[in-house]
Length: 424
Image (cartoon, rainbow, N blue to C red; front, side, top):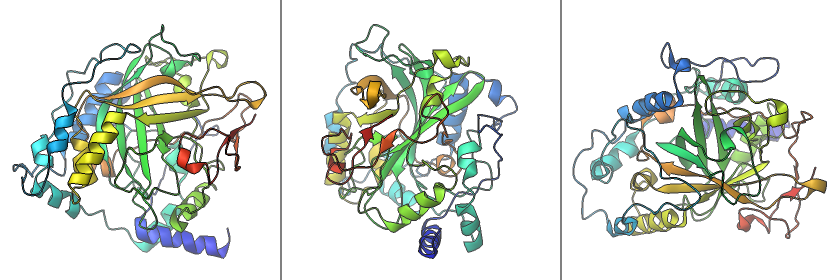
């Protein structure tokens, strides 16, 4: 790296903190070694694992002690009335079956209290020395190779330090749905898979806000499968709009990206050259009951976009607009259980490099509220997939930078900057 890039990297770690990893990958970089939340955690069913992780998440919420009533003078809560009754189920999915074993969390009234605002604002990250930050920046292999649902200590998050997490149901479309592309494994039609979702802004102190999301799907007797995405790395000026843009697994070097993010991502490329692309092939290689699929039976998309449900975006927008001092995590907690949060659309490379159209293949439904807690900020871990884009094992993403305004980009605002073009 150049001297200027190193200096920029050091600036980033000084400002935001990093993630130190100690785990070593196996030779093939495949999934190995589950971190045991309990002695028999790795042998549990997917539902049981979700219950354990959610119980840990909900047990130390920042606002648990803030059980006073909301301050009517501080918050305008009229927007919450827009939620109304539970959403109608659409024809592509059966009704969600909420797990009975999920522990309760703090009430919405507690999250809307002034005491909760203080609790969220006063949360302090662990003290990290400058040398620990520097060492952590160049120790990112564990983010791709550690295979537990909890962070392998010592670890300090570099971005997305604070967020909100919920237990969710990931549903794929019915087998009789209208999807023109069929994928395998966890993405095959007709599944309801228990998971944990975490979302929030990246928390980089320079530049416009960047929102991101991580989704963990639990598998019977096997490690969880995780996918990450962000809106775009050059941020958005509407910094209080978490659902303004789709979340994508394919990011681009956009003009205007702040130096701190560039420094971090360039350093990450020393570990994974195509670090802006997060493959989802691992979702397609295993079934919900833990059976590995043979190479000939695997089919997966190259690009996925998590599209915010319009009503969620509208109500959260109004809630934040009416309450300028409200913490984002309080607004996210207002979203009712049972709400469809995102719809997952996907496409893959077709013949001669022509992209298939985006097709809805699944949706994410809240089965608990979104909560803020020390466990999900400090301990909960979502492994980054190294993946491979093609059967031949190439790890280079099948996308090229360009300025082709005709190309489809799930975030239309990027089209004047740089877009992604299908290419085999």
